[in-house]
Amino acid sequence: AQSVTQPDIHITVSEGASLELRCNYSYGATPYLFWYVQSPGQGLQLLLKYFSGDTLVQGIKGFEAEFKRSQSSFNLRKPSVHWSDAAEYFCAVATGYSSASKIIFGSGTRLSIRP
Amino acid sequence: DGGITQSPKYLFRKEGQNVTLSCEQNLNHDAMYWYRQDPGQGLRLIYYSQIVNDFQKGDIAEGYSVSREKKESFPLTVTSAQKNPTAFYLCASNKADGYYGYTFGSGTRLTVV
Image (tube, rainbow over all chains, first blue to last red; front, side, top):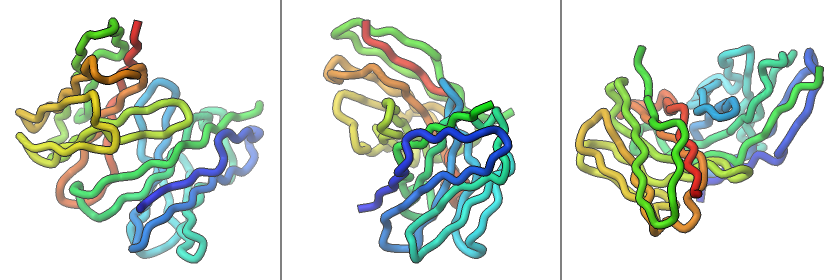
C-alpha cells in the first residue's frame, strides 16, 4: 500500500538558515509527489509537485524539492528561511495521474523559526 | 477569483446532533474531497466524488455522509454515529483532466460541546 513518512514532527531553525524537510514514500510505480504548506487554522497550499522529468523541482516561495528514486525520498529545501515560513508542511503522494486517483498525505512537519 | 468556500469556519455540536458542513467551489472542478485533520495524524480521507450524483467512501467514512447534487457543492454531514467528531475538516477539489494538485478550502473546525 502507498504511504508517506515524514520522520520529523517538529523542526526549529534560525531565520536565515537553510532548511531541509524529509519525506519518504512507499509506492511501487512512478510516484506523483507533492509538498503542501498549511498556516494555522487555514487550508493547504500547494508548494510544488513532481510528475516526471527533472528530479529537482522548483516551487513557490523559494522552495525546491529533489526526487531520489533510489532513496524513495522527496525532500523539501530552502536556502534561507524567513519568519513567515513558520507553518506545517505536508508531503503527499498520488496513486495516479488523474483526479480518479487519491492523494495520501504524510503526518506533517511543523516548522518553527528562531529569531 | 475562483476558489473553494467552506462554511462555517467554526461549528459547535451537541451530543447526538447531526451537523452539516458546507463546501462550494467555482473552479469548475469535477472531483471534490473531504478530509479530517487531527493533530499529529495528517489528513485522512472521509469521502470523495468524481462526478455529480456519485461518491465513494474514503478511509474513515463511518459516521459521515455526503451528497453531490451539483458540481459546485459537496456538503458533509457529521452524524450522531460519529463518536469523536471534534476535528478540523478540509474540503478540496481537483480537475478531472490531469493532476494540478488539490485546491483546498480554509477549513471548518468542529467542536462537540
